[in-house]
Amino acid sequence: MTTSQTSLFSDSSLDFFAISLQSGSNGNCIFVSAGNTRLLFDAGISGIQAQQRLATHELDINDVDALLISHDHSDHTRCAGVFHRKFGCALYMTRMTHAVLQQTNRLGKIGAVHFFTSGRAIRINDVQVQTVPTPHDGVDGVAFVVTYRNKKLGIFTDLGHPFKKLESIICTLDAVFLESNYDVEMLRTGPYPYPLKKRISDPAGHISNEESAQLLKSAFAHNLQWAVLSHLSGENNTPKIALATHRKIVGKDNPIFVADRHSVSDRFVIS
Image 1 (tube, one colour):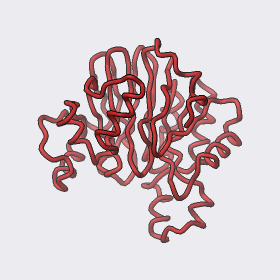
Image 2 (cartoon, helix red, strand yellow):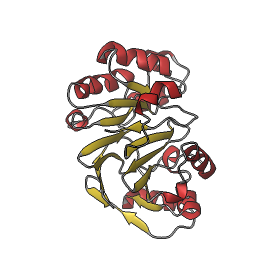
Image 3 (spheres, helix red, strand yellow):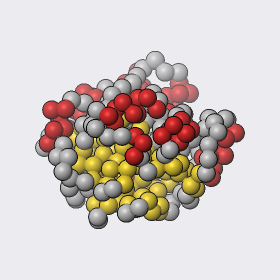
């Protein structure tokens, strides 16, 4: 993602914005700033990477109030314990997710954990985070809706399939990071073994470019300001193909971007 693509959304005077620090099966982490509250969603990249990438925006990871974990898969959790110990991020996750991470010794030594129940809302300072249960094959996985001053940002990756109520929820959002994991034809003809192809395309796997585009077509007809396509596969998708599919279905005039698998994005402001 280039700066020129997103400079329209880079007015730092506005106080509700998000930054993708990395997105994909190689690691996921999203930063959200809302008023005086700083949040990280998932910790699938190293502490050094997160610190350095936030520093490019003149942001300090030590100012983060909370780290919220969506589910137990390693590309979302591998450095959660590091973020907690090194930077003092308060940890938020479900009890089931915590149990799996403890059983597999992926957190290391940590302090108190703030547990939330899937489907319920969390209040962190002046921000509400609504958790949305997903049918992805992680343990007790959730997506998130961050609300600040009546504006809503969705963080929707690892969705499984376009489950009931997903479209209606996304249509209430002002902005969204939305999974667009694979191109159907690339997955069908690609090198993955059949069981892995089936796992990706099954109802507990990931959603395709076409499924993502159909969701955004409905959302842009409501109040959606922008969308960032997220969690693209490195083997079964490309940014070019994902954008082309969305532009064909959603239209060419809607602000749609792609979160990079290896680098930080610019700021995306919710106004």
